[in-house]
Image (cartoon, rainbow, N blue to C red; front, top):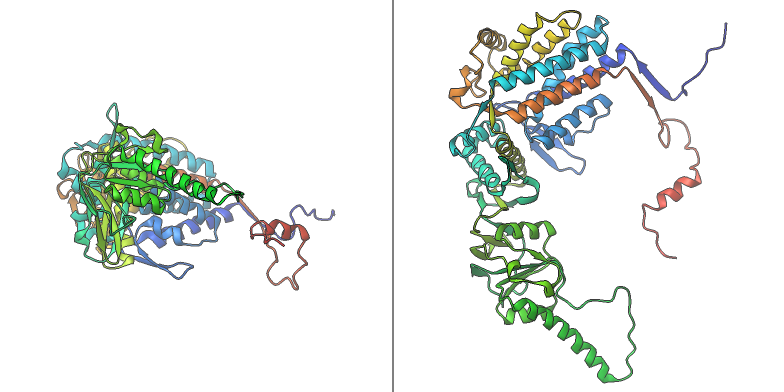
Length: 557
């Protein structure tokens, strides 16, 4: 008998075969269960304590998973799912996890029966293609310019969120903001850049009802010299700079040796003249407001305030770009290069207001602004953070509709229709793939089922009623009203979902399920600095410390 051959080190753990599959499936189901209760309008909130001791109260799937610290690799990849979903379409983060968890759950029985994972994956992919074609069939185009339809759509998206009770308010804000910054690319395409051109400013205090979308920009800055400069200007001419209005300092320490005392005065005079020239070049254009991203010296401030020009300094680059978009100015790099066309004249009012104990500068009432600020007021920080998250989702939904104006029924109706269609089709599929295909069809029912659970109605009765309705053709719009749990026509109740979100949810969920099923081996080597309970710590190798030294600042001797 030969001695056993050791291939892997002792410290490595290797699991393979069905054990891994089951572990993965269970991990993903655990993640799905955490989030399951946050689906739908009657959803629960989760309270998370993060490492710093801060509290996050939310029911946004992505926000919850972002805060979790997971050990299991499969569970980590589930978290990635909701992140992708959030970045791609901004909504449906919860459904994607629930769906993927369910897809894996139904696959477990096949793995027990020794099906090969690729067979299951093949069936799932086929189911995915068919489900997308079903979506295309039942999708219904809408008119983007019709405000009421847009409102009901965005509202159904936010209905599931915490701010559902302020329904119209947030939906209004979202639609207004996204339609403001939408840019037509021609060929009927619209590009809406939420990150760059919509700024959400949260100011604690006041009521939620005071929140509004400004036709322009708001920045957390006051004018440089509050006493001397005007704080309210009608129809200001705005110049945006990204250069410092102060004397250029030497790059590193420069020593100038002066022989005579007069030379010193000449030096000072040169500095003054340099600044004066810069200011004169700016004042040539008779601006009312000068905004720079860099510093502004006292002297420059004096020249500008003497000419009755208000100035704001050290503005964030992103804010400057927003102001440029809003009032039609061009950000100029050097005062010498200013042209009349660079001056922004689109704003109707510049005003500095005080909220709480901070000053905010408003540049509002712009003609056709391409950037805007959403001003959120609310009682507490936590509340504002949650409202902001919901607003992000709402704006993403509004953006998706602007990009692809097609609707699907909400309230689980889409999933049930897809499920019914796949069940019918499964009878025509030959070979071993038929069963996983049918299981995928059943898995789609997880979404309406969870909705029913969260409403607290009799799940089995509701589901059988729904399945019965969907078995007949022409009932595609029958779903669950998430508030009451009744079986209703979602078209009448205006429960919609956007096509982009649904399609993306299905694709992400099924592809992820396939990926996790394909894993058949997990090798985990424990390469820690010190294995836990391994006796005294081994002496640290020298190379390590030198490598670590870079991260700390090396102090000069």
